[in-house]
Image (cartoon, rainbow, N blue to C red; front, side, top):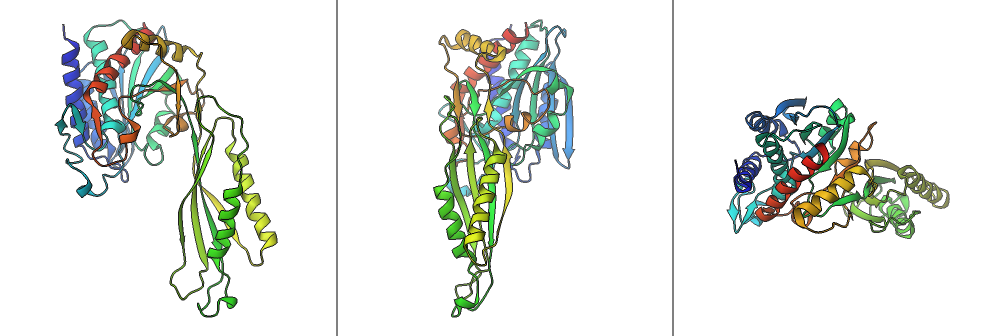
Length: 388
């Protein structure tokens, strides 16, 4: 009989191989990683399906079959990674998967190829030990989470998704049990003016000055919301500004992008209406004021009932593996759960993974092998509890 150390070695190896496949998004190119993982799964007891989304983009779905007496449990992660950035900031090759001091370095190690590997090997453990499952164990590794969740969208249109009891997303939580995350509403606001010679500003309409008034109003804006115990209050950040073409030209265009992180008690359409009303008020007060707003990103917040069967089973598995009672938590970032929640019959969702969010999207990203080991044991134990 295989030992947990042998399965951990397999997890480390699979994590390294996935890191070595460059799935930087954009453009993504996740199909190569999906095909590699599909080949691995086929050799380790899975029924395997690949969803080809577009050129070089795709998901892989691996299934350890149960008897059908229970709905399926989904272990979910994404295959794409953010760009490595400036290579001189890295001490290790971003796609080299070097192991140093019990850490695996590389882009996507913590976010979240380590979790994908641990989920896949947990399913292999189930198959290897001939655990009799009453429901299917589904491991889905999807494309595109870092940009537009295109892989999650395709996966959510399947019967595997619609007929499941719950989804476990392996985003970085350092193995904390997360049942809530904020939503995201990103907007672009544009102001339009009239160009003129810089020495004759009275002949033009300065779009940057009009944007100053917009920004002033945004800083005065107060969200309407009911507090959520697991989440901090909603936030707004003006992230970028662009305007003007030359010092001696009155700018006829300016734009800003705004990042708002929202709570489950808020409605994004009401926030958008509030912002449009601000622009209308400024148009009524300021001569020649012209502005428009467009939504760039609209992601739903997550709040799973702490008393749902999935959370109760997740807590039971946590006690069994770690010997302590977990306190469900909330996080500020969003995940593919935001896309899943848009689809009919979306099951309950929890988030728990071996990565650390403070290491994600940074040079010298790594995942700790100790946390990989904990995630492997946890995904295996939760799968047994939920499906037997």
